[in-house]
Structure formats: structure tokens, C-alpha cells
Length: 120
Length: 116
Image 1 (cartoon, chains in turn yellow, green):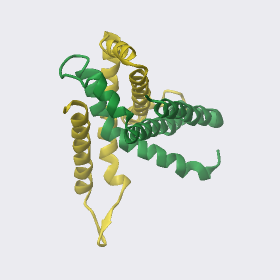
Image 2 (image 1 turned 120 degrees about the vertical axis):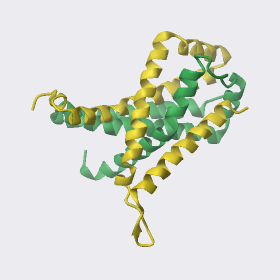
Image 3 (image 1 turned 30 degrees about the vertical axis):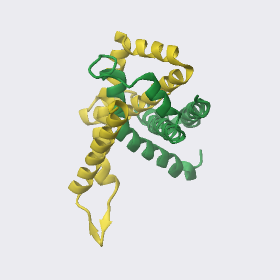
């Protein structure tokens, strides 16, 4: 099979794109770690990190990371009803309920992050 | 890599996929886009520093970072196998993916343990 078999059909390309969102999940974790290191090294080191965040290459990179992270979140949460077939009192919980619960959890988690970071 | 270890890696991949899906977009948008562009006023150095010093915060950050790394390791491993048709490099790819995730996780543990 040729290496670029997944470019032949849109559904294959979409599959590989979805799988590749994991690169951005890992990359975000690494940059977060760099930020924590700068935070621990003192105010000057943290100010340097903040200055780097304001440079155009960093902003472009972070925009790309955010795009793929959102793609990861939507595709991951949309698979939740298929990944977990939950039963309550012998009855299968409808897919819509499982899906809504996951999106609700995302909203709550995002609100919590916003509150911790911005809510003084 | 024996087949029997598969559920272990899968559980880390799955946990990382979920925690990353729920927490990362808000963190990235606020810390790396909205604050640098001055759309919102970011948290002060002293505030972030004191929050991060709390042992529970450091434990949570370690969990978030390492699980996201193992999510990458497991998923990227199979993307390389299938996407680039590299099944013959099975051992090498598994070592690079899980080894990389383990190495950076250890570095995260070291950094967070010594955080002052």
C-alpha cells in the first residue's frame, strides 16, 4: 500500500486528521510545562515567557494548537456515546443523554478554568 | 511489546483524551491567546505562583500533563503504524512514543516537585 493511501478518500483523510490531533494535545502539555517552569524560576523568567507568547510566531502556533484542540474535543466527545454504552436499571441510557452530559461537563470544566484563572 | 500491556496504555490514552478534551481548550485560549492579545486581564504572577505552589494543584497539573502526553504516545503510535505503513518498525515506534511520554512526564514530576 502507498504511504499516502489516506489522501485518496476524504473519509480516510478525516480519520488521519482526527488521529493527528493527539500531536497538539501533547504539544500543549509540553508548552504548559515550560510555562510552569518559567513560573517557578521567578518573575523575570515568567515575564520573558509572557513576552514570547506575544510574538507573532507564538500567536500563530497557539492559534493552530487551539484549532486542533477544539477538533480533538468535538471528535472525542462525539464518540462518547459509542465508547460507553451505559445502562441504568436494565435500560440503555439514550445516546443523546450521554452526549449532552459530556458537553455539559466540558462547559463546567471550561467555566471552572476561567474562574480559577480570571476570577479574582 | 506483549499484547497484555495494551489495556494499560489504552487506559492512559483514554484518560488523557478525556481530561485534555475537557480542560485544554479553555487553558490554551485564555493563557496563550486572550491574555497575550490583551482581550482579558491575565492573572498576576503572584497569584499564579501561589496557586501552583499548592500541593493539590501540582498533583493535578502533573496528572493533566502526563496523561495528555500518554494520550499522544498511544494515539500517535498507531497513526504512524497505519498512516505511514510502518508496522515493521513496531518496537522502535513504541519505544519512541511511550519512552518520550515517560521521559517528559518524569521531567514534569521533577519540575513540579521542586516548584518553589
